[in-house]
Amino acid sequence: MPRASAADAAATARRILDIATAHFAEHGFAAASVDEIATAAGITRGAVYHHYASKPGLFTAVARAQQQALAEAIETATDGAADSAALRIGSHAYLDAITQGAAARLLLIEGPAVLSWEEWRRLDAEGPVAQLRDGLRLVGLADEAIEPMATALSGAMNELALWLAQSTDATAGRRAHAALDRLLDAL
Image (cartoon, rainbow, N blue to C red; front, side, top):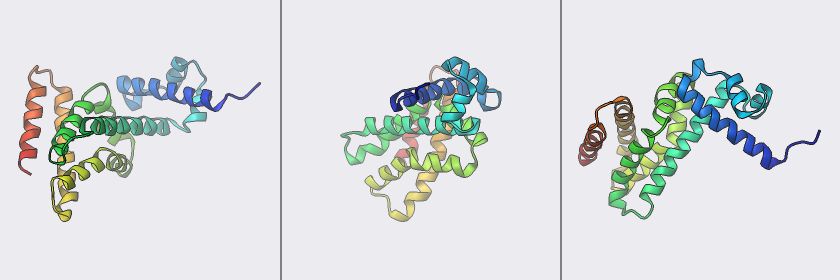
């Protein structure tokens, strides 16, 4: 039997990742089934494990992809923005991106429970938090204040995103963005 081409393998890995993202978002990590993910992808369980060594490994790949999508949303929103506006624009883009689709559940609820705390923090630090640090530098925050402020703002935005994602109030989005503006105004 001929081996799949690299392009075919990459397409299969991407299909698995997309299906796993939806499956983890719907069922949560604990209830997610690798067998169901494989069936939905039209492959065997062994093929899932060929691309992703384990169920936690598959979840880690999902979390990385979600973090990358957040980073891209921030980058797209801030592209061409003045230095003085980039932090605010990027922060609002983060809040919008993480509360769309499954990102909040996958990254803020399932992520800390499934990944080690260190791994979860590392993934966050390599994506949106790195951009947050850059934004804080652009507004002129002193070097010694960047890390604690990035940590504080990241935590506040994550909590705000959880609140917004779970809210059924039609005004929640407007109120969340207003709260974020108040935090940013304090800088």
